[in-house]
Length: 100
Image 1 (spheres, rainbow, N blue to C red):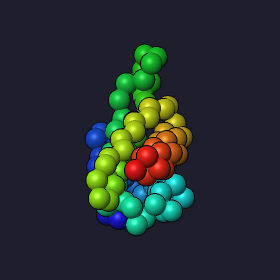
Image 2 (image 1 turned 135 degrees about the vertical axis):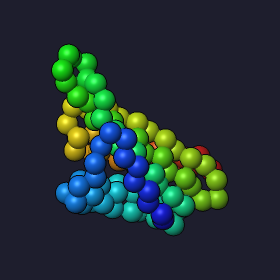
Image 3 (image 1 turned 90 degrees about the vertical axis):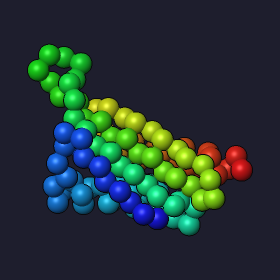
Image 4 (image 1 turned 90 degrees about the horizontal axis):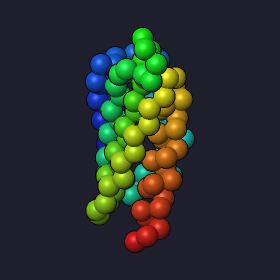
């Protein structure tokens, strides 16, 4: 499984990379043989209230031999956005694999 990290108005520090690796391993490791690639796209944009920010985490998992699962989550807490996106991606991959 190849993992690609994409930054959009966000910088991956060593700590954020470690959090992402832990969440990826926890959520998607069991599907390792069925995943060709996982792309994690992190961004920061305006929140719901004035002068607030919202973190966006988009996970796109490409399955072997075909199929793709894409989820996107927005949250005021960056770590919460990552965790929710990984859990949703895990459920989506499982659902896609069971449907074949």
